[in-house]
Length: 378
Image 1 (spheres, rainbow, N blue to C red):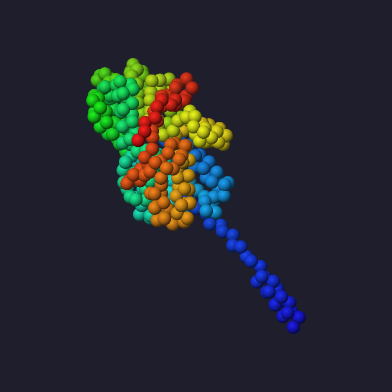
Image 2: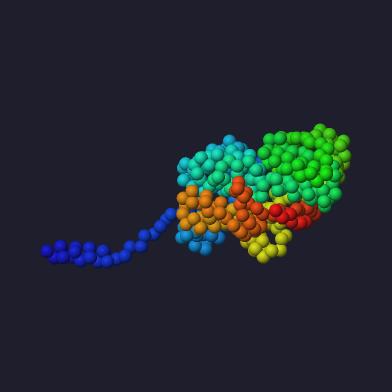
């Protein structure tokens, strides 16, 4: 009888205790970039930007009480790998959203997988128009090629007074093709002439024959809408052929590796970009300071775009109050006046492309810096 009374007292005591459930739920974010291939500099900078943003958000309490957790996959810069790793992120890691890639070709390979699974995918830096046209679950936080190509064409025509341009593009790259097409369209509308168009392929190292052909046409400038891994070598070979004209490019040039590959051949060169580290705006300099303290190097545009992408996603998840893919997608599409270190996204257009500004930068080979020249508004 005493044992029974004792048990009843214990049961009574335990039932009086209010148990507060401890949630261990996280917001799982898949991340895929080239971490070991020819454009690994892009992947490393992007993941650094993502890690910095994730740490800040988690340290401030997370999103709606939930912490962000990233799952990183290396696609080695190969489209077939990009598709495979995104399948893994969705099927095995059960991610709620995906960030990646930089290369438009790799994003195009992976986007159909995310679209089919109805998992929102945000590319920080793929500028080819076709990327978001894959479907309504595919977004980006960078401006797209039509605007980037238009911005450089206007700068070349109005600021550099160029009237005759040669174009040297990567035939294997959707990014390069998109930029060259939009540059060409705008430059011709302004009254300029494309006097030569030559192509090369990813990982090529000898560009002399194409450069000689373009030199014969005496262009005022050479537009090279490619990636740093080839551009640095092209610049050196162009200068050896006494081509002292301005070399023009896009955000694919923005990498610390470019200086090692191109050296002094990068004098008299200009690019369109998303972010200027020498922009004195308080939010930009605060980001630069935090990034340098953590990674011991200045952030480039890829790091800044990836950093913004995390906050762009976090803002949508917070408004959606859910990790459901449909609700996050809807919140992303309704984004307005989102302020990031790469500029304010006023809104997203019908294809989920942000309406935001671009900057023109000049390369300074003495300091290995990209120097702000001007801003081109949308």
